Length: 314
Image (cartoon, rainbow, N blue to C red; front, side, top):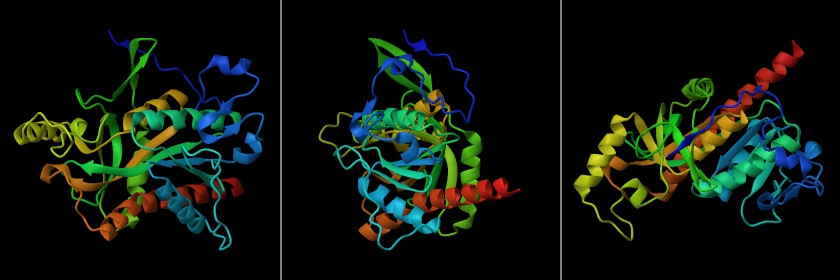
């Protein structure tokens, strides 16, 4: 029987993002998958000013995002190549401009969980405060037109469509909440109004363990169900208030909830799954679609930093 974990009270804005007493007794905490450590690197000096962490699946996409951020924040340097801070490992990439980190998370729940554990510890060791974490990505739309940007209201499981994430720990199933910051979602929606070239909506996101059978596709290497079975399931998904489907949102939301980090998921729909399984839009169209969540999040970050600067001078 699943064990429900109680929510820990935590002061938002504090640097106490980790909930692990074992870390205190370690001589060094080496963040293996991002090649950073408490002894080998001065983490407060390198990352103490971080206010936004943006994660996306593709390494190339996150390189493009940090270049966009640099331009938006007026920190663009024609000579800068924006070095990969994690160049000592081939698992993930990480770039930094001002108070913004751009990090790749790979594909699927396990890959997201690994890097997010280490990013949360990095923020803790760097003594960062008031950090916002946003996943920027792509997804399959459910009843929305291709190119629509979906800001996640609730990240839900693919069986009951409840906002929970199940994690096996010590052979037991632990159920964790995937509650996201509703205020942040609304702020992103308001910010989207400046982009008339694409539509942005708030809706639930269903998170699966697989791209093919887990998402009821008919085009995988294996398929033991009919097209009617597929459509019956996708209709149930739509009736649950789901607007899109991807593979990282529940673990992302769960870890933001546990750590006290303000979190959001912003994904563009590359296709409407009610109309098919194959992504067949031209390359230039897909490039435009993938750029849309980046534009929205970059604009949001710029506005928030402007508000913070204004508040300091008042």
